[in-house]
Image 1 (cartoon, one colour):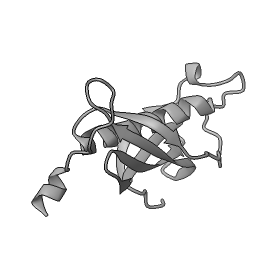
Image 2 (cartoon, one colour; image 1 turned 180 degrees about the vertical axis):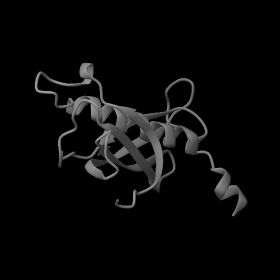
Image 3 (cartoon, helix red, strand yellow; image 1 turned 180 degrees about the horizontal axis):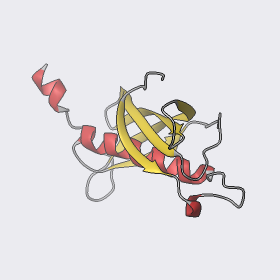
Amino acid sequence: MSAHPGEPVIRVTAMPADANAYGDIFGGWLMSLMDMGAGLIAARHSRGRAVTVAMDGMQFHLPVKVGDEVSVYGRLEREGRTSMSIAVEAWRRNRHADEEFKVTEAIFTFVAVDATGKPRAVASSPSKQES
């Protein structure tokens, strides 16, 4: 099993409603899981609302099948004044096996926003305050 980059943020089982007629999972479904996972990291790090503003290109290395366990891992790559870049990887594991395989990866860019949707400064994380 390979080492995962970052923390685990989402783990789900791919279901028939997430797949095409051949049993392959829709790429958009997988991308939405990755966006949600990155969003959890962005919200926690910025201490509030953060919105997706960009995602770099994705290449799908392997298919995900109905019944596979899908795990999303992420880590903060870069922090700007109002933005954050979050690296995300998606891995799959057959539900009857132990070995995992990386399916895809991407960098998601988020901007911290206030209650009116305007960009705001990224709040310091607890680890920064302790340093």
